Length: 369
Ligand SMILES: NC(=O)C1=CN([C@@H]2O[C@H](COP(=O)(O)OP(=O)(O)OC[C@H]3O[C@@H](n4cnc5c(N)ncnc54)[C@H](O)[C@@H]3O)[C@@H](O)[C@H]2O)C=CC1
Ligand SMILES: CC(C)CCC[C@@H](C)[C@H]1CC[C@H]2[C@@H]3[C@H](O)CC4=CC(=O)CC[C@]4(C)[C@H]3CC[C@]12C
Image 1 (cartoon, rainbow, N blue to C red):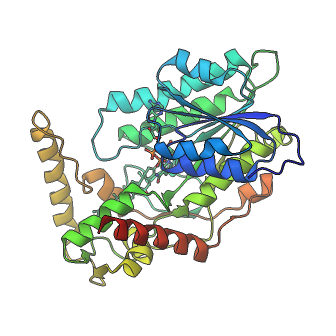
Image 2 (cartoon, rainbow, N blue to C red):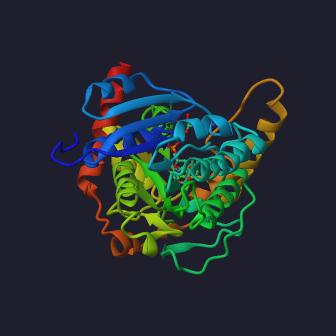
């Protein structure tokens, strides 16, 4: 908890504070930001775990609200010094309509920016995504690239399109005058695929493995690298950015940073096995069991079924043409921009990130029995 020797003066607001990443950001702020006076947690759905936070030295205010409602956002932000905007609709499975994804991710972000201007909140940290860059529709590899690596960022899927638009809005807002006349300072963090305690997709894949008798079948060649980053380190980066934005506004304002740590470069499936393996699952095959054209056909069939069944039920399996392209295209980052600009070093080593994730999965497993 916060060191009471330092003056507790700051009010932070975390949108999406009850999500997978948001919860880690909230907990990290309470542990690592000694200047925090009040922490506001704004989310569409509030979790019961928030109650335990209310007994500490920092005032924790929970706000059930919707980022698409401008007045709700502005009301929550009044008097806040910093906003960390993690709320978003993360949907690459066709669960929500493209319009809803746009409304939450783009209009929601516009509302946060306008609320900063209206209320005088000067510091905005936005959770963007690697998907703002790629993989692109042409499936070009992005091999250990950095923030300046040239890449043809062209998207058609609603999720990356919305994240790209929202990120652009955030960066363009840097320097706008907020209430009181001072400039807004913004920056965007681009995590690669986040993993760690609370990761729903990892849970889904684990359950799928159990249904298949403890086995998963390799679908993607081991040579395709997919960037992954531990949730604790992503949260730490958000906290550091928020903390440094005032002092280093000239360097950091309007900038983008990939989120990175020491997680190894592996294929999506091999990386998951780092956690699923110790939980008793096995990845069958050193090469993909099915030829790629057949996987594409299955993915297309899933998309067709989703469309046909839509009037009756929501059919949203993990495999669709978009997720297949994501998993099958190399996209990894290698950069030290965050270290150069604001002294970021991962808080958790790879070994610790791995151990924490495995422990969480094993606890989840034993509580299910
Ligand atoms: N999970 C991942 O691998 C990655 C996620 N991101 C970004 O990180 C952010 C957080 O993602 P996750 O924690 O994975 O997702 P999540 O779905 O676990 O969390 C999102 C949170 O936002 C809230 N939310 C959704 N719509 C809202 C609305 N209209 N008003 C208020 N709150 C709303 C949800 O209730 C949820 O608590 C998102 O912006 C996402 O785009 C970026 C890169 C990778
Ligand atoms: C059955 C298939 C062969 C394997 C399916 C795996 C997919 C479900 C996941 C592969 C890559 C993931 C995405 C990636 O890590 C980057 C992301 C960034 C975000 O901002 C949100 C999450 C995600 C889109 C992530 C989603 C699951 C995958 C598509």
